[in-house]
Length: 332
Image 1 (cartoon, rainbow, N blue to C red):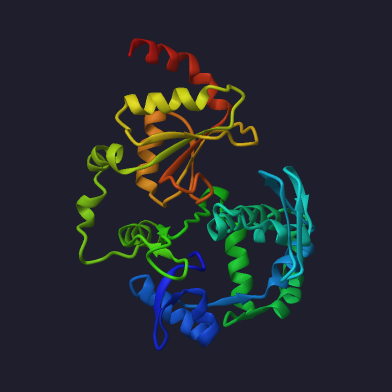
Image 2: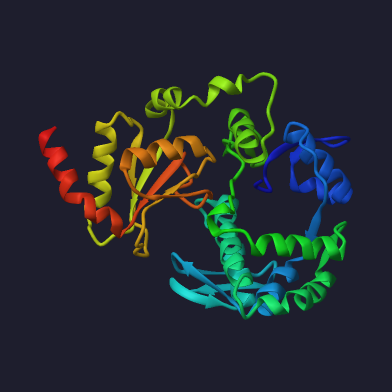
């Protein structure tokens, strides 16, 4: 949930969700989260200081991350200097914190949400490294000084054990669907919740069913196929060696009835495999798009084009279908 998410805090009124922790600590933050997310039950909490993230990366011996662009600025107020060059690299604790906290003028806090998801994936890969696993109990003990939680040490170990058995594709992340407020709506800048998108995410990711929906019909595959062309914004991004891949696949999707398709600037790293990134959290729609393409892997994360519902990031596997695609376009 973006920290600027607009919520109603008891005794305060309309505010940003990060203020709940400021005014009432974990108890108020839990209460506001539960009310905002249709009374979902929060069982435990973990609060971490900024130093926790840096220390964790150091304890793990660094994390491998792709930095998509130069990241450089000096924040004199917080005495924080960010200076990262683009490309694949192993970041130490300080650099990982820079990567997580870098704030672009265009995307602001939402861009940081994306980079934090990238880092979570990188941390998962590092934690499951055979050289790191024996060190985990000691790492947890070191990290406890940075953490405020109502988890017991035994529960922490149990969660670690669960995560070690988790396949990479089974780790699903989603950003709360919504949009930034406009300048003439509020004095403050908010992330305004898309309530229908929130309810869909709660059903698909947390199995929270609401009385107002008929779930036997709402996700019927035939219905999804009928509404998807009009409803979903699909960004196509090239991450292959074929320069015209995004343009050609975008046209192919339009020919298949996906009307709201647009091409975005190339991804700066070449990828072997195509990803269908579930930017808005709609897993069913991602399956429809993947089946239409006939290839690709679904990436359950919000790391694609921010304005899209789905982002297709074309890898080298897309090049194999270019010839067949060109024949299709010539016929049409």
